[in-house]
Length: 424
Ligand code: GDP
Ligand code: MN
Image 1 (tube, protein in one colour):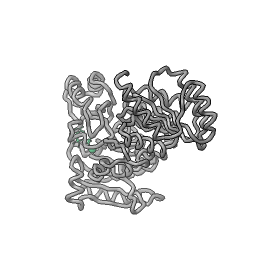
Image 2: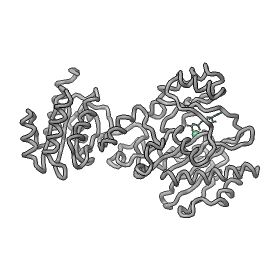
Image 3: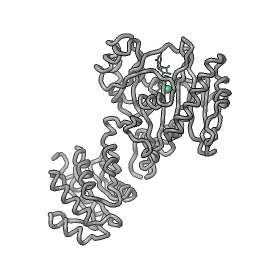
Image 4: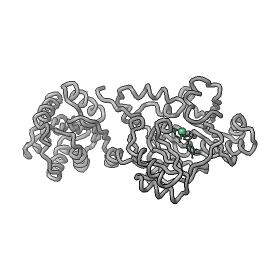
């Protein structure tokens, strides 16, 4: 496979997203991802969204405000009351170590901290949002996480008294400090099981009982939201003795997203995800890449093959775009809009193999799209399969010549992109 995502946004084993197995994730994200890597997307919530879900299930979390500018961070700090903690919101852990978590003593300091964190690159994610939380005095940091153990085919809860930013080291060097308990998914995590675990972390009965109820709530949260990971690190013991979740990590299961509408506030695309998200709403699978040939293809497999052929012939694909099985004209219009809006695109290669998708439908959609969208981008169409004669006729009436061979089409698109290079 010829393309890679440098970030950990697309990966096969979403349970590896948890802090404890982060090392595995690093290895995974250096692979070239295959088809599956795109189709099964792990929906990692940012902390502020995960905390919203935690709140819904009764887990105590600080009452913070999500902001997108330094000015907003300053007014949030005024509203909350200082000190506050300013936290980068990205779909990755290790923000503390990367300098993405800063305590501010005054609103002016909050402004400065926000300014320095916004735009930061943390593990390939650009910081576009911040969470401003009331800062607290921490007496101890604990770890509680629930994920799916795929070898046992059961949920498992992991707890440790050595939580905080070095949990990966604890997992690697002193694994005996982490306690595991499998959860019977039908009965759920039972209160006595949670208490047994909590008493291994806390001496005080009051604290152990409140940690135990948080564990049960965390189970209800992962179960109720169809998540594959729910993690609190640190679960903090404050100077006043109370126990709160200072960090929140949730990975939702992509396949179950339809059961959890975005309107519930569970997942909000960040500005850079907006494009892929809107594409999805129009029934298109779109992944932006950095090349110069905009691709529009029917079927994920053919879309991958198209990108491979372009790369093989020395070109670079600008995107993965699968317009899906039955291609209505509206879909083709949206797809064309996506390609045209990418300023890196120097030529468009439309590769359609008509099976269920009918070539005449695609041709009509394309003509409608070109009437609506004014563009001088060179266009290469490869059209073959069901109703191809009709499709080719419709296109030629509009002055477009369709090729029948994919390699030829890719070569032509690359040639035109080179020729047009810089004209845009
Ligand atoms: P992560 O590094 O991405 O996991 O981000 P966390 O949310 O876990 O924050 C990293 C560290 O920042 C935590 O382990 C805490 O030690 C510290 N931290 C977070 N919130 C607060 C706070 O309100 N007060 C103080 N003093 N430290 C905090
Ligand atoms: Mn953390």
